[in-house]
Image (cartoon, rainbow, N blue to C red; front, side):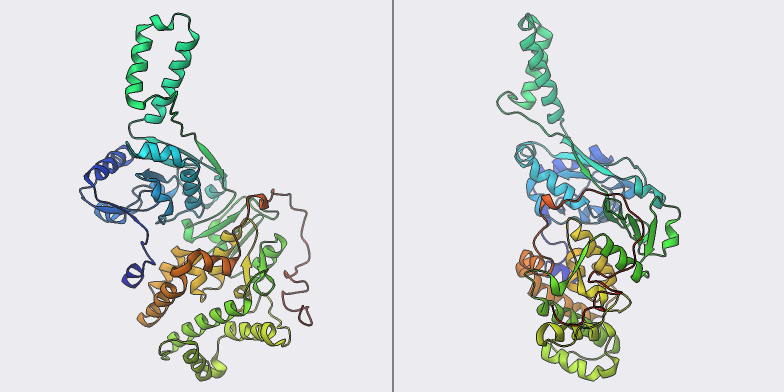
Length: 455
């Protein structure tokens, strides 16, 4: 992993904690949440306050996430909102924490100036011991306060002030006045500078979890489903009608279409489809060459073309399918018949709508040779796959991502997946109407099968 770390592709943008004051605050928060402390004088923390160095010290990478169900967090600075989130158990966690910080940034900035803020992403499930428990997670509530309880004390002081104002003889109540003075010394003048950090609740109807080998749960769509990375039978009894695993390509393709969750890259607005297809083809060639031990030189496109010539009839079907689609895009060649059974099928799609990012995570599982998409949308999967690659492939991928992605991450994401979905795109879950004939997103029996020419 050293290649990734040195290029800022792993553990990049972590927040350094090295001042004695911040280390002391972190230890107070850590003691408050877990009963443990660190002996380290400097370390780095992620969005949630998790430190990989402390995880090694405690021999517990889940020291802030017991049971992997209700993630705790420690905020030392609002700058943590730009840090990565490590050891992700639920795909929604990063978005929830980021929104919490951004919504309360002014209050958190003031609070972290005096103390660490600690909190938890709470849901109604305390332990995910069976797959069925995952379906009980419908929302997540974020609650937080400083270790010194500034927010709670400010709430108490506000109530005492209101009582003081309403009681005719409040100024004669020495105990009331004394309690107000004691709290005010800690919180400051809450009448001029209010302190408030209300609990925030986020819906979690659709999400990915790393539990049970990896499961995608969609309950907030028209046709709910669960998609398992492992055999679908490993989930046992779950409260959705459709349960699939990654081998059910036709069923997944049909389900994605019926829920209107994907679009073909070649028909997406404002997309340079040809450039995207070429890059996917390069990644496929790199993978094929690596498996066969073929040298790719500096892996420029001219070198990769030579690799394609060497492979000849052994070229992967994924490559051939995308090449046919590229010919249609650039030269008006015949419309390629790529059904959901074709290995190239899921390489031709991208997610759309409010669940775009989650759908793109699923597509990266179904098109694993597209390492750029995997790195962007599913880092947990990327790091697991990367560990098993040869040094040759590791070097190529790390160099490519550092050169082509790191320099303009937002631009690359927009070019590949389109602009971020707006809030008004959120769809209200609807009742399923019953089965319909299987159709691809573009009509007929598959996405490319029924169209006779360019459109």
